Length: 430
Ligand SMILES: CC(=O)N[C@H]1[C@@H](OP(=O)(O)OP(=O)(O)OC[C@H]2O[C@@H](n3ccc(=O)[nH]c3=O)[C@H](O)[C@@H]2O)O[C@H](CO)[C@@H](O)[C@@H]1O
Ligand SMILES: C=C(OP(=O)(O)O)C(=O)O
Image (cartoon, rainbow, N blue to C red; front, side, top):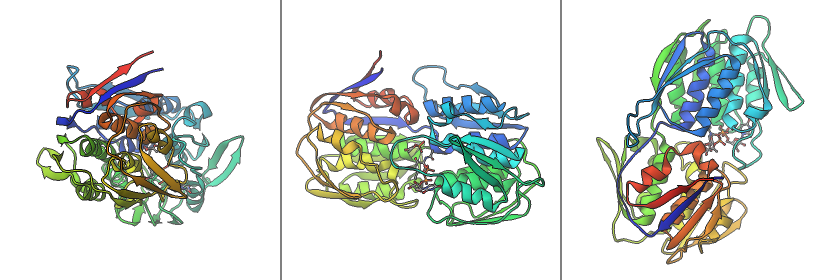
């Protein structure tokens, strides 16, 4: 099993290219199931989750071709992926594939809308909470579907005339359920109104692509979305938006190690809440026409008080990375996690570096320390893993991060991106 070895203590200086967003690429690829024509996606990141989704879509009959753009190892441009679901050959998404990635459950929306049926295993994904799918199922029922849970699968059927529009009001903001109802409603008869919709930029990105495919959607990016269903969608070309979580992660890294990094292609406006917190912590954040520049020179890290929230609030997917940063703060920080009930697995691992963190319910209190010391640590989920990398970069001495397959789900060529900025970081294979 691969591990990552880091020798910490160096500042980060230089440029880090930001990849296409995992959490946009996945629903965009799934949207290819809605049309028999070709959907061409540009700027698709090379990630384990993308590879797995290609397999899942292939199982349904989607032809996937990839045209990589990189001629040399130093080029970080994303892939162009063409997806053609000419014929859906299988409406079942099996357990062994779906259990490995939460987003694979989302095929239920387009399969049901286009084929009138879907049998999809209940999902897996990062172990950060119970993560039920009740909002998806209630929402699809509102569009007329019947749903049974049998043998660990959701069996969904549309009425004989297909799905019909309806008013879907989510009790709580859900990114995945918003993606799924958006896709299903695009091919339903009549109007669907989605209330308390997620406002994450990845929702807007999916909606923009669906509109290029012929969907009629208004309000994506706001809490109420109106969809007028159309009988069929067609092919389109779309470029995946930059990854705001990757952006925030490298921004936290340089805020922690010190130095000056240009996050190429990043957009500040996708991540205002996190950049505001970084500025409060002592980093300088400047938007340029090439991306976002983050620097911390000389000054220490100020403590912060942060609560995670749905967009435009501070993202839960940056909570672990912020905790790593706060562990070196000059004083007491407080971080409250409101999205997932079990997203503190990194606390025990950060303690191995000498971080002083105590937990009380959904709130972590972090007493900043003057130095962290490198240690062997274990990655537990995607964002927790990268918080350990950040801590390792700032710690004195050697850190070994075990179970790095979590990192490969969401961070493209992490070691290459960091080592070109002065970090001592390498992958130990086998
Ligand atoms: C692939 C992808 O885009 N993953 C992101 C997506 O996950 P995901 O779409 O799974 O997260 P949701 O927004 O659905 O989850 C938000 C909350 O709603 C709850 N819930 C959700 C659905 C449901 O049917 N019932 C229910 O109770 C969840 O357990 C959680 O407490 O948004 C999360 C919140 O920003 C991010 O951390 C993930 O990185
Ligand atoms: C939690 C995440 O992914 P998933 O929803 O696929 O588990 C994530 O991207 O941080």
